[in-house]
Image (cartoon, rainbow, N blue to C red; front, side, top):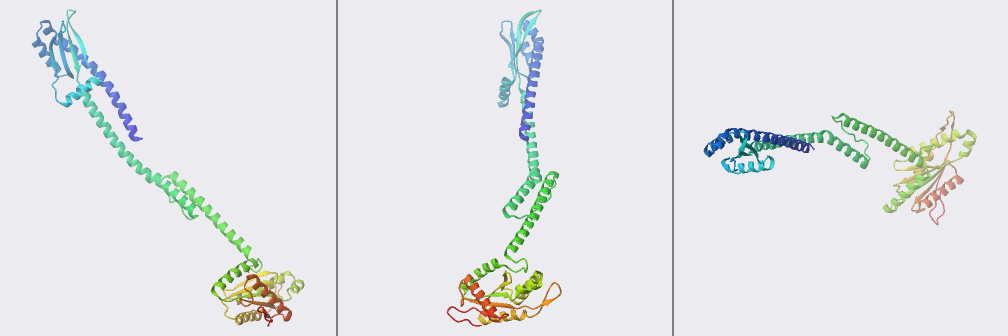
Amino acid sequence: MALLAVTTAGLAVAIGGLLTLRTYAENNLDLIARSMTYTVEAAVVFNDPQAADEALHLIANREEVLRAEVLDRHDRVLAQWQRPNEGPLARLEERLAKALLPMQTSQPLLHEGTRIGEVRLTGSAERLADFIAFGMGGIALCLLLATAGAAYLSRRLVGQIASPLVELARVAHTVRRDRDFNRRVKPVGIVELDELGQDFNALLDELDAWQAHLQHENKSLSHKASHDSLTGLPNRTYFESRLNRSLCDARDSGEPLVVMFIDCDRFKSINDERGHAAGDAVLVEIATRLHAILRKEDLVARLGGDEFAVLLKSIDRLEHAERVADAILENMKKPIELPDGDTLNTTLSIGIALYPDHAETPEALLHGADLAMYKAKRLARGTHFVAPAPHTPARM
């Protein structure tokens, strides 16, 4: 745009200058012709070609004239002058004169009011050539300066305007693609672009906070969906899902797996006699003590009501599982403190089922441990009972 503007302005100035020069050339040629008529009048009157030729040379050599002729009354050439041919430049001037300047001008020679001849002149384009050369040089210089200025402004535009916009677009693309709301736009020197970047950063701050809130809510909802709200232990859904995955791993590795089904003895009477607050305190304390006994890789869950389940992994023999059950029962001998400051004692009944000895599916394994727990409750509360192997009598 800068180059186009400079070129247009240069052409407009050149055309205006050419028109002005043409007008000047016309007036100047008329003045030269009139001056020549006064000078050669006597030579024409006396029909003296030599005197006419000398007068013609005297004036034409000093003026912008390409060709000059003096005619007598019969329109015969009495004297003439031609600017010497100086090669291509002279021919160029002649072509420019023909194209841009008036070809000829003529002035009648009058003596005592009677026409005795005529002076004819053809203008020279020497000044026109100089003007065009100067004008084209000026336009070229202006174009060079405009090019340098445009290059400088372009680099400045890229550095101060385009680069911040590219950076803003890059950050926006990264945020959209990677969900990385920690990215920020750097400050820039242009106030408007800096304000745009700060507004964008503020928007990212809000999105980051909102995403953190959503993640927290999702985590909370996920935890609530898979955990018991009272004890904080995993619920039945979570336990069955973990049991299913653990059985798949056990089938691949060939390692045994133990499931314990645990029930609180006389829990209904505790609720009825001491109230639901006391019952809740008992469940929370059972969950705490079970969690304290087990290893990190083991899983304890509340299935519902006063029923709990334990998943033991990496158990070499059934006797190891029975020792864990004995430790749980022993730990329950300590009194449980209630919210009202009173204490009570309760026991647990535990059923044990081993994969693959007692069952090979999650449902069958949990069902076998459940039946073994009821067997323990019927035989002697506060004990554990191992599920019988298929087609073998039960043992305690």
